[in-house]
Length: 445
Image (cartoon, rainbow, N blue to C red):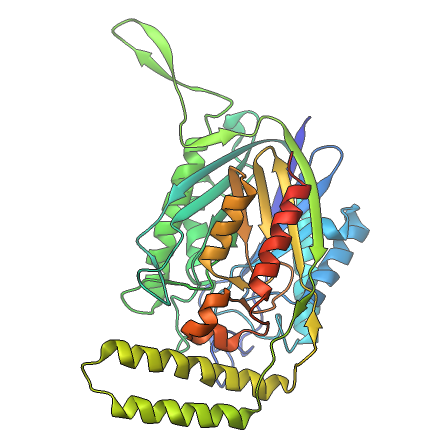
């Protein structure tokens, strides 16, 4: 079975003065462009089934943006809408109005640009060889809820190579889990943050082919920085990109073995690649489902005022040396402050339900991409990867919609930002995990 692949990228930078998303402390529009935002599209075709995967330098994508882009692409190419995955890198220096409180004009033009990149990629399909590998980056991220908590150091790559390595690569996919928040709310310029620099670094190593960056389950993982500046975003991105570029370059001899002259024996010997795998029989399969998830029940805003007042009184009464006691109070203060904000915005939610999409695209035996519609903790992705038993499973969060946080049940009692700001109840994370396993099972050999 011959695999075809095509790739393209498009600038999706919004106009200057567009408000930036991700930090509530901003109260005015952007003042310039530090670096452009891109949408990077990959189309794959095994002769029977086609699919498209897109990574966008945005904080998130609303399902209406995704639906519009899917419709444009389906009409132009015949790729079924449900075979298109559109994910965001989650940069906090991208435009507001695309994941909620939609800016209809910006949504329309962004959807058209993304669709255009997919259509261009579709038109440029050519024979490809799929190779999968994995590296490790452990120096630029940390669990932001507990420094001893899990953080995924795995960096996963997919290489869509030319059958003849002399022709250069067609595209690559890079998957790493870390919040794109090297830049802080004080930054007022549009930027892709560290994922943009990661892609630029990969290109310096392997050439100018499109590199699709998919952010993973980083709901509880933040980047490490010296200061929250552009040069630090570049440093972090360069570390991630250098590891990705190295692994992609190492994969190229798969299927076209590299040789070494042994001058003692005057023999030409093979040097085998050990850091990846050639997907010998690529086969595209796509599955997805909507999941029934209840919204959480919220209290009236004044109830949170009373809780916060009680917590502040307790905080004032403990000794300065009681670090653990202070942490227990602060984590609940953080939860209830953010939960109060959600309650003020949403109003009564009892009995309301949402139906987010879980999507999976299999590329060959043991190799797939899972799209999840929001922010998930590392532990959720690790459970999915362990239970799915796929050698090369890339988990792409912020895919096809933005629901917000899906928080493990235990985290509600632990407090902190994520269980405060989540829109869904304590059963939602388990429900999404089970749905992901079912969808992956339906496309597995």
